[in-house]
Length: 540
Image (tube, rainbow, N blue to C red; front, top):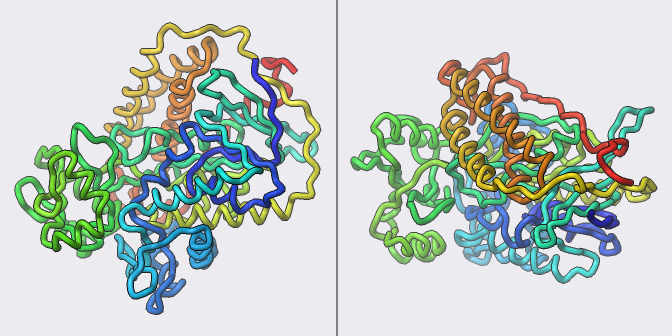
């Protein structure tokens, strides 16, 4: 049996979206921030590139909006894109007030170029933008007396009640698993904000940390929120390929600064796929690499920056340079072995720019959310921008509605009196590995009807086994994550089945052309919440 904790605001996730929101909320607000690892372990820390924002005299909001819309495959919400992009300079300045120092040139923020941008507009900090920003924000959050951080704690599920008169669900709190005590506590909050990131860990090869298991997307969907465009999983074209190093990204900036892709047979191939060559959009570059590997049986391709000066490479890409040196590759003289890897979840929970969902008092922000900003393919470095703007808009909405009276309902504690400790933990790890291989092989960069059907059948069998385990045995982090990646995987597959065309990040060999009929979003309704207050499983 756990305990009940009360807080004004519950924030789930310690990336740039969660931390920024915690810092932007009024200091008299009691905030509980939970993170399932340590607070410095998240996708933000792994973001090398930067933040896209209109900061030069030659650039304009209209140009940034046009690049975003053109890259998004015809289904970007232009109003949302305009709102987010116009907030960019404010968010960059806010970061500066927090102590963030962007790389400078001639006493101004230096701007780099990335794929599908027609202007230099990426503010960056060497090749460690995310890590540098996250370190500063994390340290500031730890100093705030109104913010309580619960590390090694995972969201199990949201608790809602149904308002019969309006038929609108109201979120009252969440069940949280604490790894150190193995207890599940009940957190009651006036507002719940999910900033849990994406779901790229679902795939065998990913540029994301182990925490990216779609927890917020899965929990919000189980609570009744709709998901949108889950078929659009962005694969980053260049992840380091080496048996001793997993999930290390080779930043797009390296191609932006002149990096060239070659096959192992020393052929520069991007020119035959797109006139923009290495600076084509991510979906084009990832498919090109995937195609070259499949046609010729390559395990990887190579990215070459050796034509730039050694001093420039070491200064501009110190993290990549040092990382590659640890495996004996000197990128000033040698090419880097790379493969595509799952990188970003363009779909997510249906929200507005404030993060408001279909459930009252529940917000979803950042990569977990779908605002319409990314469409069928996210523009490089628009992700951290969206996180910051959603944090700003979310806190403004909460301040505006802060006079609302909190629910006086007594929340039920988690009851695990009828379950036992599992003696078959190997089954969880086996199913983890099996599911990630299924998603990579059947629901990856290139898809087909047959592959999707096979994947769904295989995952249905895994889900049946995991459900039995979940309701009979005590909770563990691995079990929670496996349950979440099963739910998100099925949402991705079902969304992909509904889109009978190829658009942006979704490419089907059965429907290789874009179809005007599908110039729209893919919606899947939320599931009925199993944790309404009236459920008898819990003791009140």
